[in-house]
Image (tube, rainbow, N blue to C red):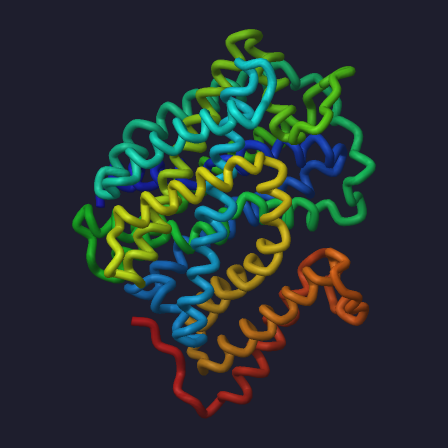
Length: 437
């Protein structure tokens, strides 16, 4: 495949990843982390860039993508887990968040404050555009990769360069009182969960594979190579922009400005746009946010609708597009902070399972392993993650779980995965090895 085509697919993938959370979380993290910025942003980049990159590539290990690969655990698990992922990154959390973020940053600065009626009107217009872009998925690569992404990149670069030039001489902001200074890397790593990109990669990998196949690539080896190239282009762009936005949040001087109830990242970006470009800054930021959120919402609607159409073929793709667009419109009218708060406990369960599944896919692909070495750690991580979320949210006292290794850093699932793989491997030593077709 020509590099030009790899670039187009890479641009498409970048635009689908780069949405609401990608804009607001890095500057917020940078502002709160103070002198610990680099440790925090490295953790964020690992979950926000590294894991999505690995996730998209892992999707090309099996010709049927994750739908086939995860059947190694159990066919029912493969369906239920994929349904949970698509609903989380789709109409339940991620898609409504794109609309609410676009509203707060592209509409509110031009009206007299936020309100339920204005949010409703904006979200209706927003989802009409998303519906028009996603109704015909075959044109999505052209619509996003060729046209919308260059606009997105140019506007982001214009804001970042001007802000870096202005803030180069500024000292880092002091660490926020609520920032966990004892574990900055962990804070950044888990903050990256909120972008939902690592689990979105599982859904987007199908779109990438289909886009590459549409360009005439069909052999398994070439699909893997082209997926690596396209995903690497998207990851490079994401990494540069995340670090830049985080650095801006770390160095911006907001003076006596009161943040109030506004989302921190939203406030910092709005302030920075005004600080760097004056009145035109609000327009520039509005274009960035609107294009970023539209491309992500479109990619998610397409991915979710195609998946549900594949498991429920009697219901047309177009019907799912209409249904998920309307559901996203309804949930978006909760407001941005409510959407984010509702998603956190769910993501703390889904993310460890998704990350472990991706890691185990690579391990069992390169190291011939019995099925139990994949099954056991996944089941144990599901149980551990559910109990950890219950304990962290104070819903029930499960004190013993806090004594697990790495619990304080939210990485308790890692030793569980390692031990589960080893035990499963030893127990299933004489069983047939996993094979990916």
